[in-house]
Image (cartoon, rainbow, N blue to C red; front, side, top):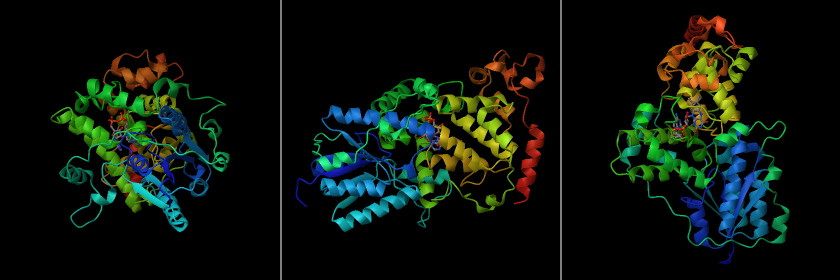
Length: 465
Ligand SMILES: Cc1cc2nc3c(=O)[nH]c(=O)nc-3n(C[C@H](O)[C@H](O)[C@H](O)COP(=O)(O)OP(=O)(O)OC[C@H]3O[C@@H](n4cnc5c(N)ncnc54)[C@H](O)[C@@H]3O)c2cc1C
Protein backbone atom coordinates (compact mmCIF):
# COMPACT_ATOMS: atom_id res chain seq x y z
CA UNK A 1 0.00 0.00 0.00
CA UNK A 2 1.46 3.35 -0.97
CA UNK A 3 2.44 5.83 1.74
CA UNK A 4 -0.22 8.28 0.69
CA UNK A 5 -3.13 5.84 0.94
CA UNK A 6 -5.63 7.54 3.23
CA UNK A 7 -6.65 6.20 6.62
CA UNK A 8 -10.36 6.14 7.42
CA UNK A 9 -11.18 7.38 10.90
CA UNK A 10 -14.52 5.78 11.68
CA UNK A 11 -16.23 7.87 14.39
CA UNK A 12 -18.87 6.08 16.47
CA UNK A 13 -19.39 6.81 20.19
CA UNK A 14 -16.30 9.02 20.30
CA UNK A 15 -17.44 12.28 18.68
CA UNK A 16 -14.46 14.43 19.67
CA UNK A 17 -11.03 15.44 18.39
CA UNK A 18 -9.05 15.53 21.65
CA UNK A 19 -8.04 12.36 23.47
CA UNK A 20 -9.22 10.27 20.58
CA UNK A 21 -6.64 7.47 20.20
CA UNK A 22 -8.03 6.26 16.87
CA UNK A 23 -7.94 9.78 15.41
CA UNK A 24 -4.37 10.29 16.68
CA UNK A 25 -3.38 7.00 15.05
CA UNK A 26 -5.04 8.02 11.77
CA UNK A 27 -3.43 11.47 11.80
CA UNK A 28 0.01 9.95 12.38
CA UNK A 29 -0.47 7.63 9.39
CA UNK A 30 -1.03 10.30 6.72
CA UNK A 31 -4.10 11.84 5.09
CA UNK A 32 -7.36 11.08 6.89
CA UNK A 33 -10.96 10.52 5.82
CA UNK A 34 -13.38 11.15 8.70
CA UNK A 35 -16.44 8.92 8.52
CA UNK A 36 -19.68 8.53 10.44
CA UNK A 37 -22.07 5.73 9.50
CA UNK A 38 -25.71 5.87 10.46
CA UNK A 39 -26.58 2.18 10.68
CA UNK A 40 -30.32 1.76 11.36
CA UNK A 41 -29.62 -1.58 13.09
CA UNK A 42 -27.57 0.16 15.77
CA UNK A 43 -29.37 3.53 15.84
CA UNK A 44 -30.12 5.05 19.27
CA UNK A 45 -33.57 5.95 20.63
CA UNK A 46 -35.49 9.12 19.79
CA UNK A 47 -34.02 11.51 22.38
CA UNK A 48 -30.49 10.25 21.82
CA UNK A 49 -31.02 10.67 18.08
CA UNK A 50 -31.83 14.32 18.72
CA UNK A 51 -28.53 14.59 20.63
CA UNK A 52 -26.68 12.76 17.87
CA UNK A 53 -27.81 15.37 15.34
CA UNK A 54 -26.29 18.15 17.47
CA UNK A 55 -23.19 16.08 18.13
CA UNK A 56 -22.54 15.47 14.43
CA UNK A 57 -23.19 19.14 13.65
CA UNK A 58 -20.55 20.12 16.22
CA UNK A 59 -18.09 17.55 14.89
CA UNK A 60 -18.65 18.77 11.31
CA UNK A 61 -17.92 22.33 12.50
CA UNK A 62 -14.79 21.29 14.40
CA UNK A 63 -13.43 19.39 11.40
CA UNK A 64 -14.28 22.21 9.00
CA UNK A 65 -12.40 24.65 11.25
CA UNK A 66 -9.32 22.47 10.64
CA UNK A 67 -9.82 22.30 6.89
CA UNK A 68 -11.52 18.89 6.88
CA UNK A 69 -14.99 17.48 6.64
CA UNK A 70 -17.11 14.67 8.03
CA UNK A 71 -18.27 12.08 5.50
CA UNK A 72 -21.66 10.69 6.47
CA UNK A 73 -23.02 7.44 5.09
CA UNK A 74 -26.27 5.64 5.87
CA UNK A 75 -26.91 1.90 5.77
CA UNK A 76 -25.46 -1.29 7.23
CA UNK A 77 -22.07 -0.33 8.65
CA UNK A 78 -20.19 -3.20 7.02
CA UNK A 79 -21.44 -2.18 3.56
CA UNK A 80 -20.62 1.50 4.05
CA UNK A 81 -17.17 1.03 5.57
CA UNK A 82 -16.07 -1.54 3.01
CA UNK A 83 -17.40 0.52 0.10
CA UNK A 84 -15.61 3.65 1.28
CA UNK A 85 -12.37 1.74 1.92
CA UNK A 86 -12.50 0.31 -1.60
CA UNK A 87 -13.48 3.53 -3.39
CA UNK A 88 -11.02 5.69 -1.48
CA UNK A 89 -8.17 3.20 -1.81
CA UNK A 90 -7.71 3.33 1.97
CA UNK A 91 -4.67 1.77 3.57
CA UNK A 92 -6.31 1.37 6.97
CA UNK A 93 -9.52 1.87 8.89
CA UNK A 94 -9.21 2.85 12.55
CA UNK A 95 -11.77 3.11 15.33
CA UNK A 96 -12.25 3.15 19.09
CA UNK A 97 -13.76 -0.03 20.50
CA UNK A 98 -17.39 -0.64 21.43
CA UNK A 99 -18.49 -3.29 23.92
CA UNK A 100 -22.10 -4.27 23.07
CA UNK A 101 -22.66 -7.70 21.54
CA UNK A 102 -24.23 -6.54 18.24
CA UNK A 103 -21.69 -3.76 17.73
CA UNK A 104 -18.80 -6.13 18.39
CA UNK A 105 -20.13 -8.57 15.81
CA UNK A 106 -20.32 -5.79 13.23
CA UNK A 107 -16.79 -4.68 14.02
CA UNK A 108 -15.41 -8.24 13.87
CA UNK A 109 -17.07 -8.82 10.50
CA UNK A 110 -15.64 -5.60 9.09
CA UNK A 111 -12.19 -6.36 10.45
CA UNK A 112 -12.15 -9.73 8.69
CA UNK A 113 -13.42 -8.31 5.40
CA UNK A 114 -10.86 -5.49 5.48
CA UNK A 115 -8.11 -8.03 6.08
CA UNK A 116 -9.28 -9.97 3.02
CA UNK A 117 -9.08 -6.72 1.03
CA UNK A 118 -5.54 -6.09 2.25
CA UNK A 119 -6.66 -3.08 4.28
CA UNK A 120 -5.51 -2.80 7.89
CA UNK A 121 -8.09 -2.48 10.68
CA UNK A 122 -6.77 -1.00 13.93
CA UNK A 123 -8.89 -0.57 17.05
CA UNK A 124 -8.18 1.42 20.21
CA UNK A 125 -9.48 2.06 23.71
CA UNK A 126 -11.02 5.48 23.53
CA UNK A 127 -14.12 5.47 25.69
CA UNK A 128 -13.21 3.57 28.86
CA UNK A 129 -10.76 4.01 31.71
CA UNK A 130 -9.64 0.41 31.19
CA UNK A 131 -10.58 -2.42 28.90
CA UNK A 132 -12.99 -4.93 30.46
CA UNK A 133 -10.40 -7.70 30.16
CA UNK A 134 -7.76 -5.64 31.98
CA UNK A 135 -9.67 -5.56 35.27
CA UNK A 136 -10.09 -9.13 36.48
CA UNK A 137 -10.11 -11.00 39.78
CA UNK A 138 -6.99 -12.89 40.85
CA UNK A 139 -8.52 -15.97 39.22
CA UNK A 140 -8.89 -14.04 35.96
CA UNK A 141 -12.69 -13.89 36.18
CA UNK A 142 -14.91 -10.82 35.73
CA UNK A 143 -15.77 -8.96 38.94
CA UNK A 144 -19.41 -9.30 39.94
CA UNK A 145 -19.33 -6.70 42.72
CA UNK A 146 -18.48 -3.03 42.27
CA UNK A 147 -16.41 -2.27 45.40
CA UNK A 148 -13.60 -4.77 44.73
CA UNK A 149 -13.70 -3.85 41.03
CA UNK A 150 -13.21 -0.18 41.92
CA UNK A 151 -10.45 -1.10 44.36
CA UNK A 152 -8.69 -3.01 41.58
CA UNK A 153 -9.08 -0.03 39.23
CA UNK A 154 -7.59 2.35 41.77
CA UNK A 155 -4.71 -0.04 42.39
CA UNK A 156 -3.91 0.22 38.66
CA UNK A 157 -3.14 3.91 39.17
CA UNK A 158 -4.17 6.86 37.02
CA UNK A 159 -4.94 6.11 33.38
CA UNK A 160 -2.41 7.45 30.87
CA UNK A 161 -2.66 11.23 30.33
CA UNK A 162 -5.19 12.28 27.69
CA UNK A 163 -3.99 12.92 24.14
CA UNK A 164 -4.20 16.41 22.60
CA UNK A 165 -6.00 17.13 19.33
CA UNK A 166 -3.57 15.78 16.70
CA UNK A 167 -1.33 18.70 15.70
CA UNK A 168 -0.89 17.51 12.12
CA UNK A 169 -4.31 16.50 10.95
CA UNK A 170 -4.23 16.28 7.15
CA UNK A 171 -7.32 15.41 5.17
CA UNK A 172 -7.44 13.25 2.05
CA UNK A 173 -9.14 14.46 -1.12
CA UNK A 174 -12.17 12.33 -1.94
CA UNK A 175 -12.52 10.58 -5.32
CA UNK A 176 -15.80 11.54 -7.07
CA UNK A 177 -17.21 8.02 -6.65
CA UNK A 178 -17.03 8.45 -2.90
CA UNK A 179 -19.11 11.62 -3.00
CA UNK A 180 -21.98 9.70 -4.58
CA UNK A 181 -22.27 7.45 -1.54
CA UNK A 182 -22.41 10.28 1.01
CA UNK A 183 -25.53 11.76 2.56
CA UNK A 184 -26.14 15.03 4.35
CA UNK A 185 -26.72 15.14 8.09
CA UNK A 186 -30.25 16.43 7.64
CA UNK A 187 -31.05 13.47 5.35
CA UNK A 188 -30.60 11.16 8.36
CA UNK A 189 -33.81 12.59 9.83
CA UNK A 190 -32.49 12.47 13.39
CA UNK A 191 -34.54 15.43 14.60
CA UNK A 192 -38.25 15.18 15.36
CA UNK A 193 -40.45 17.25 13.07
CA UNK A 194 -44.10 16.26 13.28
CA UNK A 195 -44.52 16.85 16.12
CA UNK A 196 -41.35 18.65 17.16
CA UNK A 197 -41.18 17.56 20.80
CA UNK A 198 -37.55 18.62 21.29
CA UNK A 199 -37.95 22.19 22.60
CA UNK A 200 -37.25 21.10 26.19
CA UNK A 201 -34.10 19.32 25.01
CA UNK A 202 -32.92 22.38 23.09
CA UNK A 203 -33.52 24.54 26.17
CA UNK A 204 -31.49 22.18 28.35
CA UNK A 205 -28.54 20.91 26.34
CA UNK A 206 -25.74 21.90 24.01
CA UNK A 207 -24.20 18.81 22.36
CA UNK A 208 -20.56 18.83 21.24
CA UNK A 209 -16.98 18.58 22.48
CA UNK A 210 -16.51 22.24 23.38
CA UNK A 211 -19.76 22.41 25.30
CA UNK A 212 -18.80 19.23 27.18
CA UNK A 213 -15.52 20.76 28.35
CA UNK A 214 -17.30 23.96 29.36
CA UNK A 215 -19.76 21.84 31.35
CA UNK A 216 -16.92 19.96 33.07
CA UNK A 217 -15.15 23.22 33.94
CA UNK A 218 -18.32 24.73 35.44
CA UNK A 219 -19.00 21.55 37.39
CA UNK A 220 -15.47 21.44 38.80
CA UNK A 221 -15.60 25.08 39.84
CA UNK A 222 -19.07 25.22 41.30
CA UNK A 223 -20.53 21.78 42.04
CA UNK A 224 -17.69 19.39 42.80
CA UNK A 225 -17.20 20.94 46.25
CA UNK A 226 -20.09 19.32 48.14
CA UNK A 227 -20.82 16.72 45.43
CA UNK A 228 -20.70 13.75 47.85
CA UNK A 229 -23.18 15.43 50.21
CA UNK A 230 -25.56 16.95 47.68
CA UNK A 231 -25.55 14.56 44.70
CA UNK A 232 -28.67 12.75 45.93
CA UNK A 233 -30.86 15.87 46.07
CA UNK A 234 -32.70 16.30 42.77
CA UNK A 235 -33.83 19.87 43.47
CA UNK A 236 -30.21 21.07 43.46
CA UNK A 237 -28.01 21.22 40.39
CA UNK A 238 -25.33 19.22 42.22
CA UNK A 239 -24.21 16.66 39.63
CA UNK A 240 -22.24 17.16 36.41
CA UNK A 241 -24.89 16.42 33.75
CA UNK A 242 -22.03 14.94 31.71
CA UNK A 243 -23.78 11.63 30.99
CA UNK A 244 -24.85 12.42 27.39
CA UNK A 245 -21.38 13.90 26.73
CA UNK A 246 -19.80 10.64 27.90
CA UNK A 247 -22.40 8.61 26.02
CA UNK A 248 -21.47 10.24 22.72
CA UNK A 249 -17.81 10.59 23.58
CA UNK A 250 -17.53 14.38 23.53
CA UNK A 251 -15.33 13.89 26.54
CA UNK A 252 -13.44 10.81 27.69
CA UNK A 253 -13.46 9.36 31.20
CA UNK A 254 -9.70 9.75 31.41
CA UNK A 255 -9.97 13.46 30.57
CA UNK A 256 -12.34 13.68 33.53
CA UNK A 257 -10.03 11.64 35.74
CA UNK A 258 -7.06 13.86 34.97
CA UNK A 259 -9.09 17.06 35.35
CA UNK A 260 -10.04 15.97 38.88
CA UNK A 261 -6.46 14.96 39.72
CA UNK A 262 -5.12 18.23 38.30
CA UNK A 263 -6.85 20.07 41.14
CA UNK A 264 -4.38 18.59 43.64
CA UNK A 265 -5.13 15.98 46.31
CA UNK A 266 -8.33 14.20 45.37
CA UNK A 267 -10.66 14.81 48.32
CA UNK A 268 -13.84 12.93 49.26
CA UNK A 269 -15.91 14.85 46.70
CA UNK A 270 -13.43 14.15 43.91
CA UNK A 271 -13.18 10.48 44.81
CA UNK A 272 -16.96 10.14 45.02
CA UNK A 273 -17.29 11.70 41.55
CA UNK A 274 -14.59 9.48 40.03
CA UNK A 275 -16.24 6.46 41.57
CA UNK A 276 -19.50 7.40 39.79
CA UNK A 277 -17.59 7.66 36.54
CA UNK A 278 -16.22 4.22 37.45
CA UNK A 279 -19.77 2.78 37.51
CA UNK A 280 -19.97 3.58 33.82
CA UNK A 281 -16.87 1.50 33.09
CA UNK A 282 -18.23 -1.29 35.31
CA UNK A 283 -21.51 -1.31 33.38
CA UNK A 284 -19.64 -1.56 30.07
CA UNK A 285 -17.38 -4.30 31.42
CA UNK A 286 -20.50 -6.20 32.47
CA UNK A 287 -22.00 -5.73 29.01
CA UNK A 288 -18.80 -7.07 27.48
CA UNK A 289 -19.10 -10.25 29.56
CA UNK A 290 -22.93 -10.47 29.31
CA UNK A 291 -23.79 -9.20 25.81
CA UNK A 292 -27.53 -9.94 26.18
CA UNK A 293 -27.82 -7.80 29.33
CA UNK A 294 -30.68 -5.71 27.85
CA UNK A 295 -32.88 -8.75 27.33
CA UNK A 296 -31.91 -11.34 29.96
CA UNK A 297 -31.73 -11.03 33.72
CA UNK A 298 -28.18 -11.40 34.99
CA UNK A 299 -29.67 -13.55 37.75
CA UNK A 300 -31.53 -16.05 35.56
CA UNK A 301 -34.15 -16.96 38.19
CA UNK A 302 -35.63 -13.47 37.71
CA UNK A 303 -36.69 -14.41 34.21
CA UNK A 304 -39.34 -16.58 35.95
CA UNK A 305 -40.75 -13.59 37.83
CA UNK A 306 -44.55 -13.40 37.36
CA UNK A 307 -44.50 -9.85 35.98
CA UNK A 308 -47.93 -8.29 35.46
CA UNK A 309 -49.40 -7.04 32.22
CA UNK A 310 -50.93 -3.63 32.86
CA UNK A 311 -50.90 -1.26 29.86
CA UNK A 312 -52.79 1.43 31.80
CA UNK A 313 -50.31 1.28 34.68
CA UNK A 314 -47.36 1.41 32.28
CA UNK A 315 -48.88 4.40 30.48
CA UNK A 316 -49.51 6.23 33.79
CA UNK A 317 -45.86 5.67 34.70
CA UNK A 318 -44.60 6.83 31.29
CA UNK A 319 -46.75 9.95 31.35
CA UNK A 320 -45.96 10.91 34.95
CA UNK A 321 -49.53 10.31 36.15
CA UNK A 322 -49.12 7.64 38.82
CA UNK A 323 -50.36 9.89 41.61
CA UNK A 324 -46.99 9.62 43.40
CA UNK A 325 -45.42 13.07 43.03
CA UNK A 326 -41.71 12.16 43.11
CA UNK A 327 -42.30 9.44 40.49
CA UNK A 328 -44.35 11.75 38.30
CA UNK A 329 -41.86 14.61 38.66
CA UNK A 330 -39.06 12.33 37.47
CA UNK A 331 -41.00 10.97 34.51
CA UNK A 332 -41.96 14.49 33.45
CA UNK A 333 -38.41 15.77 33.84
CA UNK A 334 -37.37 12.88 31.58
CA UNK A 335 -40.01 13.70 28.97
CA UNK A 336 -39.21 17.39 28.98
CA UNK A 337 -35.40 17.39 29.16
CA UNK A 338 -34.36 13.87 28.07
CA UNK A 339 -32.59 13.39 31.41
CA UNK A 340 -33.52 12.46 34.96
CA UNK A 341 -31.64 12.79 38.23
CA UNK A 342 -29.99 9.51 39.32
CA UNK A 343 -31.82 9.26 42.67
CA UNK A 344 -35.14 9.75 40.91
CA UNK A 345 -34.21 7.19 38.23
CA UNK A 346 -33.83 4.69 41.07
CA UNK A 347 -37.17 5.67 42.60
CA UNK A 348 -39.15 5.45 39.34
CA UNK A 349 -37.46 2.17 38.39
CA UNK A 350 -38.25 0.67 41.78
CA UNK A 351 -41.85 1.85 41.52
CA UNK A 352 -42.30 0.25 38.10
CA UNK A 353 -40.70 -3.09 38.91
CA UNK A 354 -42.03 -3.43 42.46
CA UNK A 355 -45.18 -1.46 43.23
CA UNK A 356 -46.50 -1.97 39.69
CA UNK A 357 -44.73 -5.36 39.28
CA UNK A 358 -43.98 -4.63 35.62
CA UNK A 359 -41.04 -6.19 33.80
CA UNK A 360 -37.84 -4.12 34.09
CA UNK A 361 -37.37 -4.49 30.31
CA UNK A 362 -40.44 -2.28 29.69
CA UNK A 363 -38.82 0.47 31.75
CA UNK A 364 -35.45 -0.05 30.10
CA UNK A 365 -37.03 0.34 26.66
CA UNK A 366 -38.83 3.55 27.67
CA UNK A 367 -35.60 5.01 29.04
CA UNK A 368 -33.72 3.89 25.91
CA UNK A 369 -36.13 5.92 23.82
CA UNK A 370 -36.44 9.01 26.02
CA UNK A 371 -33.00 9.58 27.62
CA UNK A 372 -30.41 11.65 25.78
CA UNK A 373 -27.75 9.61 27.62
CA UNK A 374 -29.41 6.25 26.87
CA UNK A 375 -26.66 3.75 26.65
CA UNK A 376 -26.68 0.01 25.90
CA UNK A 377 -24.56 -0.67 28.98
CA UNK A 378 -25.53 1.77 31.75
CA UNK A 379 -29.26 1.59 31.05
CA UNK A 380 -29.88 -2.18 31.31
CA UNK A 381 -27.19 -2.48 33.98
CA UNK A 382 -28.94 0.03 36.25
CA UNK A 383 -32.42 -1.30 35.52
CA UNK A 384 -31.28 -4.75 36.53
CA UNK A 385 -29.57 -3.29 39.59
CA UNK A 386 -32.78 -1.63 40.80
CA UNK A 387 -34.99 -4.60 39.86
CA UNK A 388 -32.82 -6.89 41.97
CA UNK A 389 -31.76 -9.16 39.11
CA UNK A 390 -28.44 -7.49 38.31
CA UNK A 391 -24.91 -8.02 39.51
CA UNK A 392 -24.26 -6.48 42.89
CA UNK A 393 -27.93 -5.50 42.91
CA UNK A 394 -30.02 -4.07 45.69
CA UNK A 395 -32.03 -7.07 46.94
CA UNK A 396 -35.53 -7.27 45.44
CA UNK A 397 -37.15 -7.03 48.88
CA UNK A 398 -35.62 -3.56 49.36
CA UNK A 399 -38.58 -1.63 48.01
CA UNK A 400 -38.31 2.16 47.91
CA UNK A 401 -41.33 3.87 49.40
CA UNK A 402 -41.80 6.84 47.01
CA UNK A 403 -43.31 9.04 49.73
CA UNK A 404 -40.45 8.46 52.17
CA UNK A 405 -37.89 8.83 49.36
CA UNK A 406 -39.52 12.11 48.35
CA UNK A 407 -39.54 13.40 51.91
CA UNK A 408 -35.91 12.39 52.41
CA UNK A 409 -34.34 13.56 49.15
CA UNK A 410 -36.70 16.41 48.25
CA UNK A 411 -37.44 17.61 51.80
CA UNK A 412 -38.73 21.05 50.78
CA UNK A 413 -40.67 19.58 47.83
CA UNK A 414 -39.03 22.00 45.37
CA UNK A 415 -38.22 19.32 42.80
CA UNK A 416 -41.78 18.04 42.74
CA UNK A 417 -43.23 21.55 42.53
CA UNK A 418 -40.99 22.30 39.53
CA UNK A 419 -42.34 19.37 37.49
CA UNK A 420 -45.87 18.81 38.82
CA UNK A 421 -47.58 22.22 38.62
CA UNK A 422 -51.02 20.80 39.50
CA UNK A 423 -49.91 20.41 43.13
CA UNK A 424 -47.32 23.21 43.28
CA UNK A 425 -49.54 25.15 45.66
CA UNK A 426 -49.00 22.53 48.39
CA UNK A 427 -46.38 23.88 50.76
CA UNK A 428 -43.22 22.06 51.87
CA UNK A 429 -43.28 18.31 52.13
CA UNK A 430 -47.09 18.20 51.95
CA UNK A 431 -46.52 18.03 48.20
CA UNK A 432 -45.42 14.39 48.59
CA UNK A 433 -48.86 13.28 49.87
CA UNK A 434 -51.40 15.26 47.82
CA UNK A 435 -54.16 12.70 48.45
CA UNK A 436 -54.31 14.00 52.03
CA UNK A 437 -55.55 17.31 50.60
CA UNK A 438 -58.18 16.19 48.08
CA UNK A 439 -60.06 19.51 48.14
CA UNK A 440 -57.06 21.34 46.66
CA UNK A 441 -56.26 18.97 43.76
CA UNK A 442 -56.27 20.42 40.28
CA UNK A 443 -56.55 17.45 37.97
CA UNK A 444 -53.75 15.52 39.64
CA UNK A 445 -54.53 11.76 39.58
CA UNK A 446 -55.21 9.59 42.60
CA UNK A 447 -52.49 6.97 43.30
CA UNK A 448 -52.61 4.10 40.77
CA UNK A 449 -51.71 1.56 43.43
CA UNK A 450 -51.88 1.43 47.20
CA UNK A 451 -48.29 1.35 48.45
CA UNK A 452 -48.84 -1.37 51.06
CA UNK A 453 -50.78 -3.57 48.60
CA UNK A 454 -48.20 -3.07 45.84
CA UNK A 455 -45.39 -3.93 48.18
CA UNK A 456 -47.11 -7.08 49.47
CA UNK A 457 -47.88 -8.18 45.88
CA UNK A 458 -44.25 -7.68 44.85
CA UNK A 459 -42.90 -9.65 47.79
CA UNK A 460 -45.37 -12.49 47.14
CA UNK A 461 -44.25 -12.64 43.48
CA UNK A 462 -40.58 -12.62 44.48
CA UNK A 463 -41.15 -15.51 46.92
CA UNK A 464 -42.33 -17.70 44.02
CA UNK A 465 -38.86 -17.61 42.44
C1 LIG B 1 -32.78 2.91 36.02
C2 LIG B 1 -31.53 3.68 35.65
C3 LIG B 1 -31.19 3.83 34.31
C4 LIG B 1 -30.02 4.53 33.96
N1 LIG B 1 -29.70 4.67 32.63
C5 LIG B 1 -28.56 5.32 32.28
C6 LIG B 1 -28.19 5.47 30.92
O1 LIG B 1 -28.87 5.00 30.00
N2 LIG B 1 -27.05 6.16 30.62
C7 LIG B 1 -26.25 6.68 31.61
O2 LIG B 1 -25.22 7.30 31.30
N3 LIG B 1 -26.55 6.53 32.91
C8 LIG B 1 -27.68 5.87 33.27
N4 LIG B 1 -28.00 5.74 34.61
C9 LIG B 1 -27.01 6.15 35.62
C10 LIG B 1 -27.14 7.56 36.19
O3 LIG B 1 -28.46 7.80 36.59
C11 LIG B 1 -26.70 8.64 35.21
O4 LIG B 1 -25.44 8.33 34.66
C12 LIG B 1 -26.58 9.98 35.94
O5 LIG B 1 -27.81 10.33 36.52
C13 LIG B 1 -26.13 11.03 34.97
O6 LIG B 1 -26.13 12.29 35.57
P1 LIG B 1 -24.79 13.09 35.78
O7 LIG B 1 -24.00 13.07 34.52
O8 LIG B 1 -25.14 14.39 36.36
O9 LIG B 1 -24.05 12.17 36.84
P2 LIG B 1 -22.83 12.49 37.82
O10 LIG B 1 -23.30 12.24 39.20
O11 LIG B 1 -22.22 13.79 37.52
O12 LIG B 1 -21.81 11.30 37.47
C14 LIG B 1 -20.75 11.45 36.51
C15 LIG B 1 -20.85 10.37 35.47
O13 LIG B 1 -20.70 9.08 36.05
C16 LIG B 1 -21.47 8.14 35.32
N5 LIG B 1 -22.44 7.51 36.23
C17 LIG B 1 -22.96 8.02 37.35
N6 LIG B 1 -23.79 7.13 37.94
C18 LIG B 1 -23.78 6.03 37.16
C19 LIG B 1 -24.43 4.77 37.23
N7 LIG B 1 -25.25 4.43 38.24
N8 LIG B 1 -24.20 3.88 36.25
C20 LIG B 1 -23.38 4.17 35.21
N9 LIG B 1 -22.73 5.35 35.11
C21 LIG B 1 -22.93 6.27 36.07
C22 LIG B 1 -22.21 8.90 34.22
O14 LIG B 1 -21.47 8.76 33.02
C23 LIG B 1 -22.18 10.32 34.74
O15 LIG B 1 -22.23 11.28 33.73
C24 LIG B 1 -29.18 5.05 34.98
C25 LIG B 1 -29.55 4.91 36.32
C26 LIG B 1 -30.72 4.23 36.64
C27 LIG B 1 -31.07 4.06 38.10
